[in-house]
Length: 196
Picture 1 (spheres, rainbow, N blue to C red):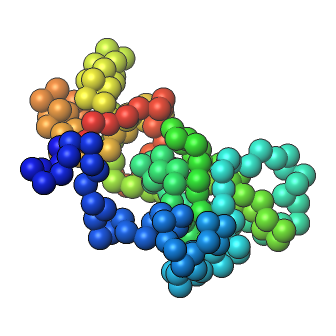
Picture 2: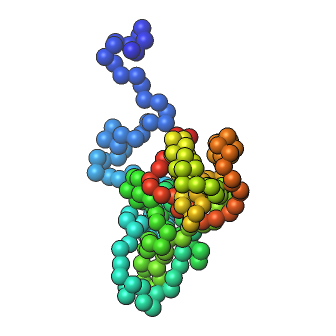
């Protein structure tokens, strides 16, 4: 507990980093007086006043977009799963994403509508392994093995796409399926998750 000089019920002294956090214990500060804002938090408050915070993708009719400038937020498949961060659009507009846990941004969806523009989600091209299965059975086998390793998979016509990762290279080589490295838009099916 507290050591030989302390009674077992006595809490340890506050560390230096936690001192002065309890305003009620500060004799110079009345309980209702807020602490003075630091310079960095003042800058953050100003930035939040002008930077839109997105808590849900925007649902709209195309008529709402008439006359507005189109802007895009280009993200990889992994980035479309990161729901809490600052992002910049292709036109340099800054947005703050504060989406619910588990949200996945879908290419083609409208993320934000402002007074003069709207922001649409676009899929970035990214390194992938493009697999060309020789049969339906081979395609099912690849899909099963990829999913069993908790990797995502996309269907692109008669090809399967997986992230360009050394584990996938080893798997595809072991299975003996034809594949090649490419840069392509990667929109995985299902939610998928990885154990990194």
